[in-house]
Length: 369
Image 1 (tube, rainbow, N blue to C red):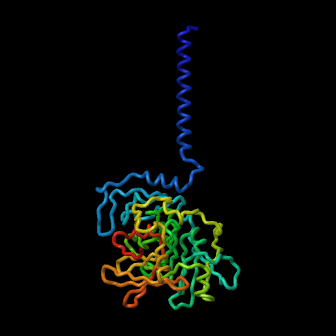
Image 2: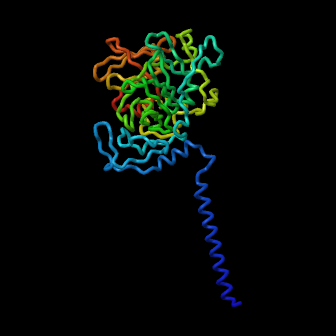
Image 3: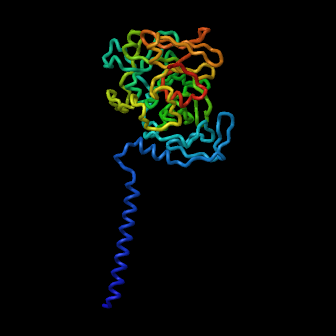
């Protein structure tokens, strides 16, 4: 055999082998670029923040509602029926929180027990949302150690349909009347976030609702505002002391398999610099994760620093730019009331400072030192 031919044959074989190896390496890289051991939330954050940005020419303002001529794709493939033609927010800033639609299951058929007679252990210092019927005959307590795993409870109290909501990333516990156009609506957890705040969705139209604002920000109902239902942030012990045998406790029999004795967010609440998802506005007037009691007076969002309210004579006044004088009071059993000079009381909710500031400043008004 001619030596030169043999050399050429060897060269060809080596070249083919190298091409095959490179092809195998490329396939391996593509199929293994997602680390199965990585945190799903961080992976979702990376994917979502790599979405392309819309140009201003793609957006036309129509009042508060924005029509997107070239709508950006939602970071979830679970919403096939949502009307994406109108939005109050930049869709490219909606992030996947990791779980899919209803991956965090709302509680749709809540069971309640009498904590004075039925045996279900709850730590006395467990915080939760307390709602009371308008005739004050019934009070319901929704412990945070359950809400942190479900985020929404579709319920009613004395015939009034309500959605009890909690966003662990914002520390925001808020209750809304869940009637739209006179009809009761059920809400679920979309698995998506905006400004680190949970986006709920209406199961009738799949419209997305901002949990902290209570308004639809994307979909058929874009611009629609839910009404606040009065609520309190109490410990279980305070709820027992204040409401006694009127109190009903949300049972751990939720239909889901969750460890309600485990808090899944570590020291997130105490670490002011730890954010799983970044936000646009980190206002440093107060520590970012300090809890505020907030409300809406007319069109003005207002907030009072809860710890300072408790420590400084349990009462504080805030004069708004429209002349309204608000008084916030903090009672012995941690009941907070916000009233004006005419005696009108405003339903309140509770949230971390960064979330109130991020959604309401400028324009919102607040009290604290």
